[in-house]
Amino acid sequence: MAEKIKCLIIGSGPAGYTAAIYAARADMKPVMYTGMQMGGQLTTTTEVDNFPGYPNGTDGTAMMEDLKKQAERFGTDVRFGLVTSVDLSNKEGGIHKVMVDESTEIEAETVIISTGATAKYLGLESEQRLIGGGVSACATCDGFFYKGQDVIVVGAGDTAAEEATYLANICNKVTMLVRKDYMKASKAMQHRVNKTENIEVLFNTEIDEVLGENVVEGVRAVNNQSGDKTDIPVTGVFIAIGHTPNTQLFKGVLDMDETGYLITKGKSTKTNLPGVFAAGDVQDHEYRQAVTAAGTGCMAALDAERYLGALE
Image 1 (tube, rainbow, N blue to C red):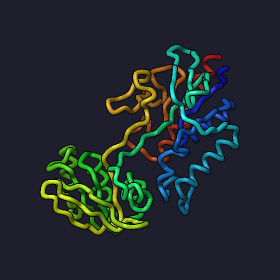
Image 2: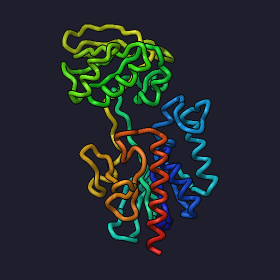
Image 3: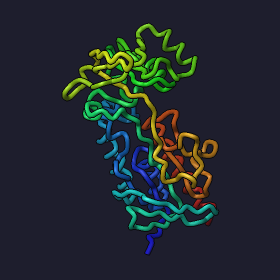
Image 4: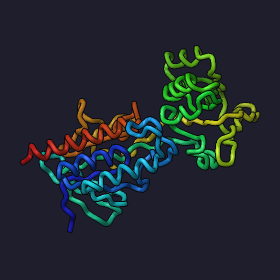
């Protein structure tokens, strides 16, 4: 027998937990399935200094634990599990059917999708080992900790150029590693990079290895034309080669842009299907901050509450 609920939340980052807090307070008795990475991307960040309400900063995992406890205090049923298939209704007041771990069936009146996005990494063993120890995928999140230091940005698009110019304002020197002999960034962004004195761009260059035991001490860069290797002493490595929204489950069901981010209507969190809402990085490729994700989580719960109210 399928379990019947008012509100299902898929995903457990700042967006999911904030949606849960608001939905629970509205007596929607939300059930949340956390996914395999409980707490989402923030659990890979050691220090969080830019989320309001933490004057001394906090740890990403600790902050997600705080949000989880707050959601549970109001009655959210937080469950560890992975949604494996969906059958979403396309009519007003329809019931959305969801399968969890290929064995548990849920029937929900509303669904809030907050499955987030996954940062793309290079896949090097040394890089993966030092995530949180100097390797980051978010300059606006972690750049502050490298004030006055030398850092590397990997990437050639607008995001990489933006991260490099942002870091150049606070770091001593920024070295950009570009795999090809040209940048993919827009001309305007390239001009900004070229005009910034403390940014150096190395073309045809990739990371061979991130150096350091517990923290980043440098990178071994390799010229992919000559094969020459150079050690560059830095304390921070920012990977800016893009994100992949976690929307595979909803392909062909929900409207999404060409890169897979869910499309929401106007200023709302409504998707193209009634009673289905999207919040956080899964529908936001522009800001990607914990605080903006939390804001859309609040919006999604309010949208879901109003949707249910209009049906009564």
